[in-house]
Image (cartoon, rainbow, N blue to C red; front, top):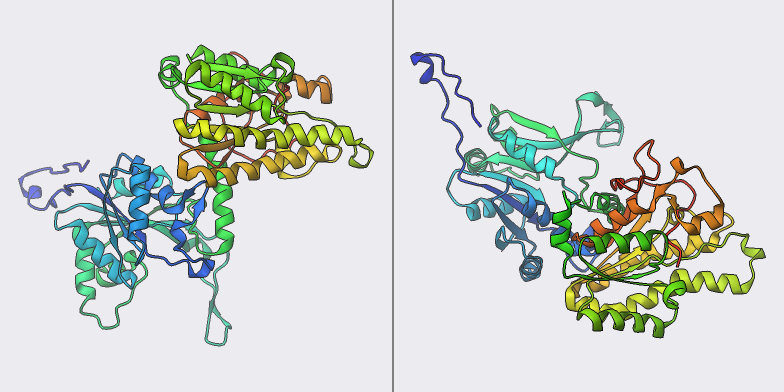
Length: 505
């Protein structure tokens, strides 16, 4: 809100007219071709974490309450591709998907024409910055109440040098005054229009940065800089694809948690959940928790139902049982797993085969059998890894290897199944108090272990979320031990402790 600082009759005439925008428009610039990535498609159509990059980006603005409208400027020849993504994702704020220009200058002019003549806030954002946070969007829009132009930037961690035509250093600017620019860049529409109108009379005009246009052609206009984030990277080079994918894994730990029992019940009543490995540990706790909220849960395991997850006929029989009882399967959860310690060279073939069959062949078999059921409900497959997937552990090499394989399986299936609306995620719990872990490691101090109930709660949050292709870390809050009555909140971060247990079946 603009505060009225008028103190008397004479001051009233000097008070500038309050800024009253009709709406706030996010313009997503998606004109890149993917040349530097060596792709045959524009980089914004490349899939990361199960969705095209541009879909992730658009979703940020779709869910931002500060944004009223989204306009997409798409690369030549790919407007229809973008329209299909918008329609499939149900992005209601997107009002136009149009072709961009040959240059950044031309694209901005097209965007300004598409926005229309009314006074409004405009945010220009690169489509290939999919990890934009809601906080940055909010601060950009809020800053426009006080400033005509707003940029987003982060401090430079590297020393910047200036060189001449012979690549010899000519200057080393003071790093504390330097920033690395990001997007969005936000403007009051009259300001950016005026800057481009003046620029049209400059025969040497060429810009890759809209704040640069305001700085050059409206030099008296303050440009406010707000803090960006290290995660708000631009996917430009091949390594950026891998970085963005890993950052999405970390961000996924922010699976939304509902506020009360009623909210969970509203989400889960009428849903059918099949849990493989549901007799003990995490699987058992998830079964009990989901039932309390009204879901129909069918737990299967070797010990309780004689179900071997590596046998296709057992898996199909279990799925058929659940489907015939309720007419649907919304979620399939695979907590089944075994942990056998020992040096690989000393392990007998029977033990090795059992580890590989239960820990990897089992989830693969379940995934294949579950897909037809999950397609009908647009449901989710939930797998479990452990911290050992980040680095193989001595004396349980096969266990570590199978857990790493499940991470790759999660990401691959999320990509494969995106077109049929089936989501796939993977829980990565910290060392967890389960019977399987106790058998492998003996009794351990309770305060060092995560409660199985906490992992179950985070698992449920993921099941009712829209996440896909994610590895969700679940960790104890500092100083916490197992707390069955108050599950710990899921938070992100790499776990470097010994392998956590998934469940015992």
